[in-house]
Length: 365
Ligand SMILES: Cc1cc2nc3c(=O)[nH]c(=O)nc-3n(C[C@H](O)[C@H](O)[C@H](O)COP(=O)(O)O)c2cc1C
Image (tube, rainbow, N blue to C red):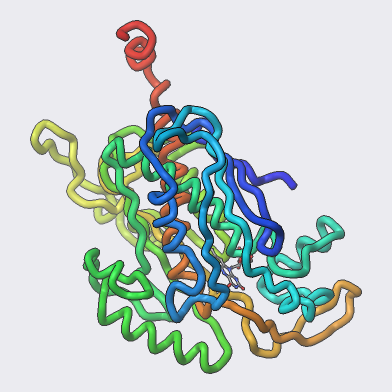
């Protein structure tokens, strides 16, 4: 199966299925000399872990990451960093009822029609567990960016139709929904409870803010910063849309309202507003990069739904087992991971944009 490799210079290659032996990733292209250890990576893994709050699935696995190579005495060696998480709690028998039936909202039908074979025990490569590999490699990218003064922070701005009105970033880690608004988080929790009681699920929106970006990261034409981030984030399961800055709202603004005015401040070019979301012409413009990703409701629901079998017969299905009423809280760290991987890659690519940079590396040692 193609499509499991991401990045140009900071390149990741992921593998594994939800109900196989395990999942993992090889990070190739991380420079030598970066301080990192498994505890640092595990912190991000724990934020993605199921069962970490009452809105998460009950599939409570340790999800302990093991670094197999590429790190010696807490420092990257410049060699491939291989990381693996072994599956401990497959419970395959929970899924036997859906062996021949395509679950609505899932990739089941596509896998069967495309490959003629499907791991019916769960989502396989399209399972939420696939994101373990993204989060492990994303933590390495995050550590790399930290050294350059770049921070990637995501949080939930809407869930179950309840919008965060505030951006109280201290609040994000204090509520199980990772919302920057305490009252909104409480109201949203009630809506999620209601959906759970009626055997249903809800969607939401994650906002991500990348701060500390220098001007000029991103390549013209196909590898623009916004295009690259959009591809990275759209590749996460259940994401149905991505917007930057004023986003879809820009479509109804006048040019005079949408353009961000500019001024010199302390010898630096600065923008007066950030409708651009920190990206102009595909390059970072020095402001925070701000984007939002819309997530659909969790497709696995215990309600009776209409479907078909792989033998092309109509049938009805209820999807039992362990599923989040919303994937949104657990996807926060996944969005951060994909953003960090994208920016780390483009930062390395940007180093070769100018002859004076190249001379610095080869002649001014
Ligand atoms: C972190 C994460 C966890 C997920 N967990 C579940 C889950 O427990 N149950 C489920 O039905 N879908 C879950 N999903 C969503 C499905 O994987 C996804 O909707 C499905 O593969 C179909 O792909 P699509 O929505 O991108 O078209 C999760 C997604 C993410 C990002």
